[in-house]
Amino acid sequence: MIRVENIYKQFGDVTAVNGVSFKAENGQVTGLLGPNGAGKSTTLRMLYGLVEPDAGAASVDGVYVNDDSIAVQQRIGVLPDTHGLYTRLTAREHIHYFGQLHELDRKTLLETTDHLIELLDMGSIAERRAEGFSQGERMKVCLARALVHQPPNVLLDEPTVGLDVMSTRTVRELIGKLRQENKAVLFSSHLMHEVSSLCDQIVIISAGKVVAQGTPDRIRDLSGQQDLEEAFVTLTERTE
Image 1 (cartoon, rainbow, N blue to C red):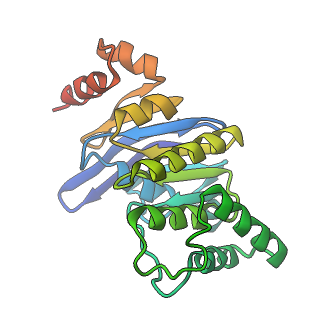
Image 2 (image 1 turned 90 degrees about the vertical axis):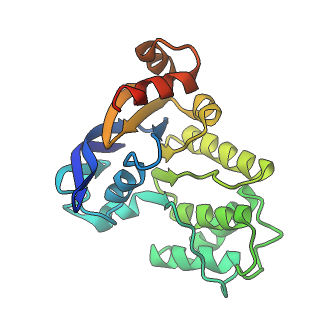
């Protein structure tokens, strides 16, 4: 389980995150929504230890990031908002490299790599170098390396941005499988139909603050709107 407790982050005169609190339960998909600049990516970065909060705390399975960031990183798989790859490594080599960083034994690493290549339909690119990969191919490699150590918690920052229809379907199906495996999945997205079909819980952030959270039905009730996109617009406009 992922828990965020009243975290704050300021960059110069800009308050990026202003007292955000929420939790992402095991076996559920929690959507982190908000307009550009709302604080979503900064919140995720504080969760996986890339940015230190000015106040408040974040924990994963009861381990606080500020107390033991390495232990937290062992329990999370992260797809960040940038998808950098080593251009001279093949897709398979990327997965192996990240598995070795997590100190997987060779047998487990080989089996897990083969499983991820099949799961993400990467057979055609497994032995190709990353240079020249399409956006969808790059995304699949990044997802595979995030999941190679079989983490119980998964953080995905805009996982379907720029993907074609088939790659988007692959990502959505993967999120569904992660839920079935009782993992806590936290992802940010701008796509309301995606959120509506995938999320058990929604957390809406605007201007660095949580303005609403709950099930999709709860979000509709809070806004007085039946359409989830209209509910999102109504709730975020209330903070402006």
